[in-house]
Figure (cartoon, helix red, strand yellow):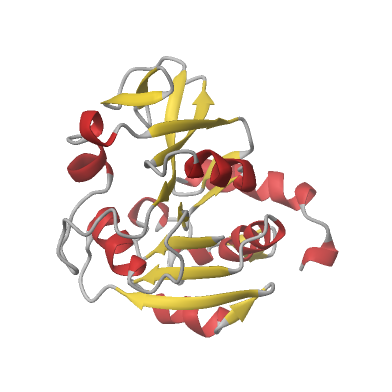
Length: 235
């Protein structure tokens, strides 16, 4: 299995807590957050990771080099911010497999059942969005699901329980070729949402641990969770 990790954002919301490293390198329980994410991917059977880097991206590259935890690492640098879609489109050019290519956010941890999700994607090779249930979806927005397929992306704001887009996708490598390499666009707002009825993306539901360290309160929650979750032998 192969993964793209989006690690090129500016981390504006976390700047008050972590200012000297890119957001995915923020220290969690004594180690960079990306180490926690990569070790999890390695344990789940991933063999190759392509990083999409930008802001302070050299710090990520210098830290990990070309391999980590038994996985090959490649890097694609955004010369200018490309949005989530543009970053994924560019990183796909460095991928070796036709699919499934998993896409992860570099500031989000999701304990996903990766092999089951890959088998789920292989049934018809349509896009898969990983969904996680939360009690308050106001910060994320919700997914409208019908017969296992996503028919709508409901905007943020309403404080109700629901299934959210956890920011993890499974794609065929060529699915974004309708966009130009280097073009800026959002994977959700410019691709998945407007073409939902045509793409008929499927939803894979998971109740695995989900943490988005992009806001200070979640960053602090992650400190306590991972301090207990990972032993010193993982360091």
